[in-house]
Image (cartoon, rainbow, N blue to C red; front, side, top):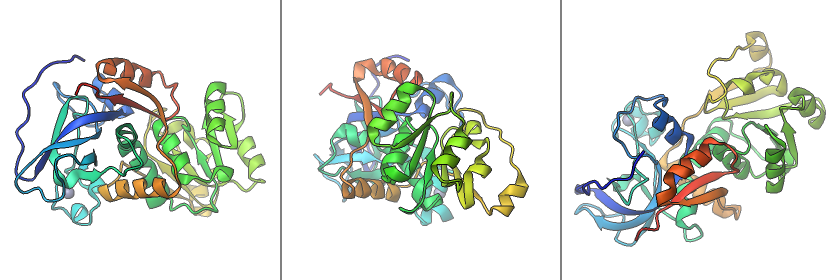
Length: 326
Ligand SMILES: [Zn+2]
């Protein structure tokens, strides 16, 4: 990974040039840099999908934005004409592209991918949102359709998507979070989560059953993969929902189909979210008077350090790179 000068991209009629002010990092950036991302990406490329900045130039056909607007990029770029895209569900498009290139001074993108940043968020807040908060929103509200009465078991609670889920659910009495160290347990408690289980030295099943009076939970929020599948069907109530969005602890899991149908359990996969979801996330956070949880910000020239920090998995929430160059 290196810093270099590249020519400025030309803008098309319906495109906008953004001076990037902040870029949130995700595991996706780590996976791409290591060549293990699930889609093949050929270098050279510029990392960073969670992009927030200020509009500095607009194409002739741009009507929704003007120079000086503070904007955030919705990261999934659908093909625009398939059944899913016409339904504004671009995260289900077979031909989607990802916005990529946030670790730079500027970014050119169609006006259709942009949303205005609400006044209550700064650029770092906005750049913390896209992938993690969209994914968490999709998992909780589009797939599991959680209500205030539900109890949700959060695996990977301190990760970007885990903290996003806990914050968006906003029902700390009904939240059980799982972490892998005492340091992380304490961090989650500091967020207001009442019940935190350290899976390294506690029996998750026994603790969950004790906390739920032997009933189990309504929803399992799973951004980790294999580790969350041990006893998942026993941990869920009848009609429970398991939602997965990643596979960092392993991609293969076994399942007891007898329990699946007898308990009428639903299993969902969730991938990122739509521009509509991003607006919903911002509106929801405003309604509950919350801001995204940012663990640490780095300056642009420290972007490599920021990726290493993310790789060490000690953060609580998002890691954001701030572009201070202009
Ligand atoms: Zn499409």
